[in-house]
Image 1: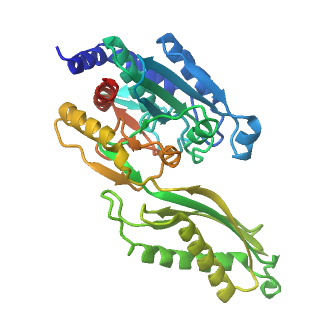
Image 2: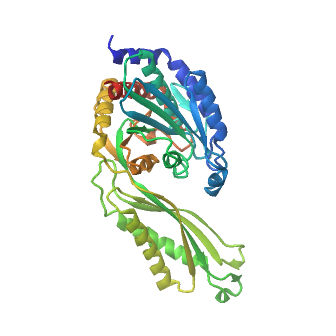
Length: 410
């Protein structure tokens, strides 16, 4: 039996335990907002300790967490050294997730298994890869081979708010500096690039007045409606900018939230809009933000000069660009994924943005790969009835374990 076959056999023999581990992770909510995620970190650390994996706990200071609009964050690092020398390979997954919302036919915190699918919020993205990575590491330990290098598990809790208090915080504190990174996946594909994201808050300030005397006020909602249409026209123009990265098409703009007004009989004096501008890897983030600000300012100045404008950046997530230093990672994952899944696994980009970009910004070659179907939409990730096919979980665990063996073999 080859070492790869030994890894596969260990994972198969311990698969029921792995599924139960994932169920117990899903059963503790980590809705963000509100983002009170330290309890889940403690729960995870206890489960890991019961398996012989000791997690270092790193609480983020309360003031920083509250300033970000959350309640509590504790990030975890498990470090497993094999021999001396060799690379450090980090495996990162995030435990925070958007609230479940409406439309579920299964308990979002039940971890229920139906016809080979495990249902629950974060079952697919990305508590699944807490299980993928922990059991891939345990499988590697079981070989007791003279390897050289270190495997680190990074389980963090700030991806939904941008990652700055998750991986970003660990990196800024000097708590880790891996040579390579594999981060939580959401499809069969090996992802080496992703879109960036700029989120902005616009506050349009007019003058409220009685609806019987509308001319005595300045209607902020009317200005906002006009601006909204202009932004949608701009979004149509953005489709003409094309990316050369497979899996990524074009930039786009979405207005996701509008609030304003005081009552039905009052001319709205204030409206707030929040928008999301996705950026392809070929775009420069600073130029995109400057372009968007200038567009909005010029439109209101021309068409609604009596409306005041306040703009605030909520998030600037830079895109992940292909890094040639990732070649050993990509080649190993693609090779073993083809062996395990029986098909060629492409290297692609994704229109999503992730906190993997923070590792890349710190100089760490990084790719995205983990448990998932052929497309992210198949898993209902971040939608009602999110689920994970258990065959995908086992396959990804085998691929990651085999890849770690390659990378740490002297």
